Every structure is written in structure tokens, then in C-alpha cells.
Amino acid sequence: MTNLKPVQKPIAYDSNSVLNPIAPILLVIAGAALLLEALFQLTDRGIIGGDGALAWRLEAIQNFGFFDGVFEHFRTNGLEAFLSQPKLALSFITYPFLHWSIPDALIGAAIFLAFGRMVSLRFSIWATLALFGAGILVAGLAYGLVSSSGQPMIGLFEPSCALIGGYCWTEYRFRKFQGEPVWPAFRILIFLAIFNLVAYLFLQPNDYWVGQLAAFATGFGLSYMLAPGAARRIIERLRGG
Image (cartoon, rainbow, N blue to C red):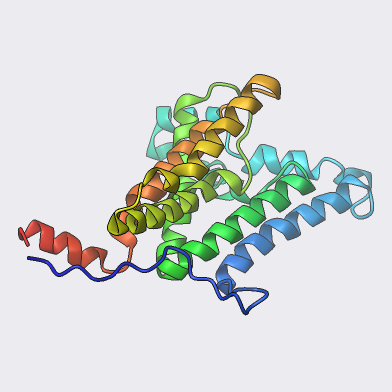
């Protein structure tokens, strides 16, 4: 029979530190998105680039945002479309770095850093990046499959839902081990559902929730394989241990 080791609390936090550590690579990713937004703010105001730069944001979104039409194009034409139009293929990984506005970019970066930090304290940084990378791809694929709105999906928030899924998994495992109710581990998911419902009913309707839900489920599911000791546990289960 497998010996169970004590489960640590899902969040490591040093109450004596004003700023708890964030992995440098996470700062680089968030910083790249914020620097790009700062550039667009300067061009939107005509501070740099002149009149010709006023459309840089829209051109960047058009070229590197994720559109459901681009996904349908690749799905119809297959691998040949990827090879013949690499710039379109890049939209599968570039859309998180584009935002509509400063608040959009700041909220996306804050959520990415907050949950990226919390997940990286429990997992390795490589596992954290794997969750985020999977969230980028799966959120795009799900949005492309379901949406027909023609609206581009951009921003850090949707793929960061994979990190939220990873964080909820650590909460779920901790509560299950402690014999506590597990539903509070999914409070964030409930909040996201309510937020998206309100946004859909009273603000501009969109299909971004599809990407968010897909990324969350991906992050939660992959955490079983990426958490510390996961490979050993999987092997022991396969052996009937």
C-alpha cells in the first residue's frame, strides 16, 4: 500500500515579506505584454510614430490576435496552411500579449502574476509554464471551435485561467486530504461564471468564456500530471500499488 505523505498548504506565503518572490520568467512574460501596451498608448496619443502609428494597435490585433476565422481556415486547409502562412499561425501564441486598453492589460498581467506565482510555489516553474502554454493553445482552440462572432480573442486573462485551474487543484487536493469540504476550492470558478454571465447579459456579449473554461479545465486536469511526485503516483497506480 502506498504511504501517504502530508499535504502542504496550497499557498506558500511569507507574512514577513512585503513582496513575495515571483519567478523572473513570469515577470518577463507580463512585462512584455505591459511594454507592448505602453507602446500602443504612446502611438494612440500620437506621441511617437506620427499619424501613421495611430492604427498600430488595430493592425497588431488584426495580424496577431486570435480570430475564429483563422482557426477555421487552418482546420479546413490543414498543415499546408500552417506552412504557407506562418504569420497567421503565430496568432495561436501571440494573442496573449495584445490588449484593448491599459486596464485590460493591467488586470491580465496582475492575474497572470498572482496565480503564476501561487502555482510556481507548489509546482516547478517549468510545470507552471507548461500549464500556461497549454492554456494558450487550448483557449484558442476552444474559442475557434465554438465562436462565430468574428471578434478577436486577445489578452493574458484567458490563458491565465489555466493557472487558476492549477491553483484550484492544489486547494482541492489539500482540502480532500484534510477531510474538509472541497467545494470552496472552486469559489474562483463560481465567481468567473457569475462575472461572465453578468458581462454577457448587461455588457457586450462575447464567447471569451469558452476559452476561459477550456483553459481552466486544462490547467486543473494537467495538474494531476505536473504536480510534484505525479509521475511516481501514476506509475504506482498503474502497478496497482
